[in-house]
Image (tube, rainbow, N blue to C red; front, side, top):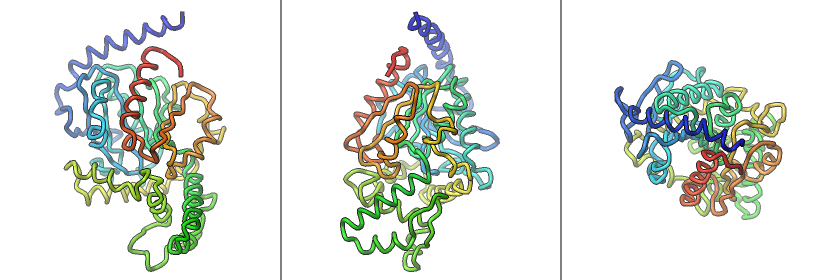
Length: 358
């Protein structure tokens, strides 16, 4: 009986999606494959939509970073998804083509509210009662908060490179690269990591960057992330994620200097205490029970958002969930194992549209 009752709102949704989809591209300069600006909570922000049938469910991509704007990346890697979804990429406040001038307006709460305002705009524009969320890295923090606060607006949440805690991530990554440096007798890495010190329980590094590295690193956390990438913890088998940056920047959508400047501006988000307070393993924060199905795409070799840390969180979730391990990936499974990534997204769509369970 429950299955048939579920199908009634799905059929209603498909009716409105078809009706809305016919008019979705009309007016206001909204064109598939072209950047489009709209006002979200008082700031002009940029989205890029690709779809072969705008009646298909919307998939909103929440990029990481913070500030790692990647408007063209999903289309370049996964045009096939556009047969099944209306794929929406969004440059968050302060990043990419959504510049923000006041760092005080860049807070986690504001990003969540911007994302929800965009979700509601997409639902209205495309005539849909719910949409899908795909978060990557820091975007998964926004995603978990969205489905917790606004569960009725989302079919499912997919977290790729799920962030569990910014502080715990930083500590785990530091411990990992320090051990790797010792294993490989990398004297330079050992000395540099020792100089910045292990981040404390407030997320702060106790040391500082030595003068001879001041032109290379702006912040101690950049040292840790450099060695995470160098050890294949961002892209498995590579020493950095530069190849992904190139796919984004070679598209012609961004001016490289502006993109980098706004990425650096976005680091001011770390001035927000709510970022440091976030911890999905803390039961009091409410991220262990959801009214929305949650799926997690984790690379086996991810040491940016460490998979081992994620595995301490996953058993704590007491609602519909699934953990999909990418055995040949680190932090970017959508780049490292594209066929599996697409296959799993299509399966999730099938499961959730039909009311199946995972």
